Amino acid sequence: MRGRDLINDCLPDELILEFLRRLDSKPTRDACSLVCKRWLHLERFSRTTLRIGASFSPDTFVTLLSRRFLHVTSIHVDERLSLSLPPPPTPPPLKRKRGSNKSSSSSSSSSPSSSSKRQKVSNNKTRYGAENAETCSLTDAGLIALADGFPRIEDLSLIWCPNVSSFGLRSLAQRCTSLRSLDLQGCYVGDEGLAAVGKFCTKLEELNLRFCEGLTDVGVIGLVLGCARSLKSVGVAASAKVTDASLEAVGSHCNLLEVLFLDSECIHDKGVVAVVKGCRRLKSLKLQCVNVTDAAFSVVGDFCVSLERLALYSFQQFTDKGMKAIGKGCKNLKDLTLSDCYFVSCIGLEAIAHGCKELTRIEINGCHNIGTRGLEAIGKSCPRLTELALLYCQRIGNSALYQIGKGCKSLETLQLVDCAGIGDTALCSIAKGCRNLKKLHIRRCYEIGNKGVIAIGKNCKSLTELSLRFCDKVGDVALVAVGKGCSFLQQLNVSGCHQIGDVGISAIAKGCPQLTHLDISVLQNVGDMTLSELGEGCPMLKDLVLSHCHHVTDNGLNHLVSKCKLLETCHMVYCPGITSAGVATVVSSCSHIKKVLIEKWKVSERTIRRAGSILSYLCMDL
Image (cartoon, rainbow, N blue to C red; front, side, top):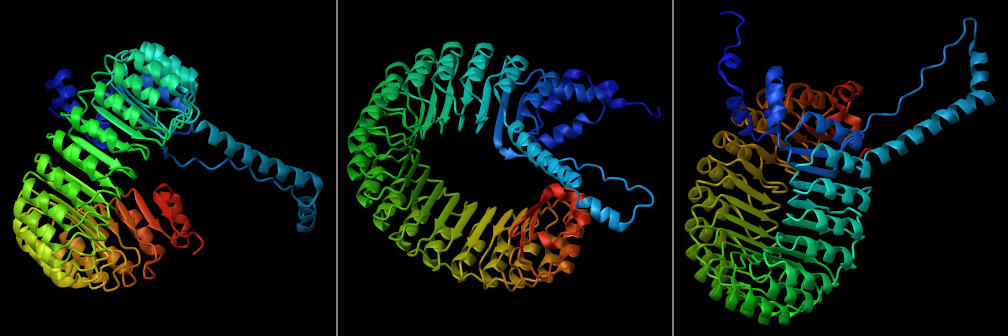
């Protein structure tokens, strides 16, 4: 029957709710809520997660949300996500009386009364801006409203909310006793509020206290005593008054702890040892503590038999001795990160390789004493390795990656940054041995050229991400091979590869139809022909970076946007061939556009009125 709603007549509420719960994308859920009033009601009923940025009035905003969404259990408030505020209201123009002439108008504008009016308007604008700055931050009142509106909340993140204090946190804890995860990163809460969380939220499992400068051992210990039976994850960073005493309390009471993150100069061996001995279930340990030494890691090797992830940053008293202890005791280690550990050498990495054969991920960043021999040991002893990142490793050479290619057949992700000793020979070894490679990110490795990238294109058919930033020896020939062999490629970044031009990018456009992200910034040999080819061959393109491409003009942009209707971001600063007309074309043709980065002087008033919220400016005075 004409006009009859067959879907709503046939489908029960339970089936529509199940359908809505399976939608992961917020825009998709929002679109479904606009189908009809019934779907709007059901979508609100099914939503369990809310994300809130720095809104115009977050306290009021939270109250409104609590009335609409009744079954929310997870709320994330992140005030780093700012919203552009509306401009201050301008006063209506003064009406001139009939018969007034220019001279009288001029004289009146310079009169004391007119001057006082202008001063009053200026003061109002200043006061308006100050009030906006204050109202754009969640306060204790908003936190109390959140607790009243969502009493069954289980997961709460309050990231960089400076106006939230212990009073609001205490009120929240009293009402939301089912809280299981609490993130207070950057909040200036005190000991009283944290102790209240420990007293009332006895089911708390995850706690993040990074950059909570108002805390001391008193508050942390109070929370630990209250949540001892449930706490599984703790993170503390940049809290100068949180010392070993807090960690001793954690070690004594939190037997279920699995994750510990510490970034502090006030933590010593005593605190780490207390946690390690008391928390036998520890699986993840992430430390940046300059005063922790090998002695603590000897205990880690003895007691942390379940440890799976270890990340160490900027250690000055951690050597091969500590590495040997970990390799001897932590047989289940799967993820290892070493960053700026200057006193660890190949001997320590060899000990890890021989003892931790379950490793699947390794990141070595700025450890200048680790060389080829250490990584060769990883290739020989760790066949399950799937991800390898080498950053600023000047002593690692080609033979190390030869061994990785020979022994680690399951490698899927490889990242190389500023590794002077790694060249085409190494990349050929990876291409031939690791045919399941999906992500390859290379930056400033000047010995890598066409030969290595061609080998990747011929052998790694499953490649989805390729980044070759500032690799001067890579040219069009390499990209032609990638275009022919890597049809599943989704992301490509060749920023700063000066030998790449229209031929190489056109080959990508013809051979990689699934491409969604492309960065060709600082390429001087790319012009409008490339953009035209991209429009024809890559209709799924969402992110495009054209900055510093001097031969790209408005004509190329017209061809691109006429086909790439899904484009969401476009960066095109320092492109002399792109004018205000090109910017207007991008804004008007791409209905999904979210961000355009351009010089301010290239944007017309009409474009600003039409799409001011998506425009971002770089070098505003150019």
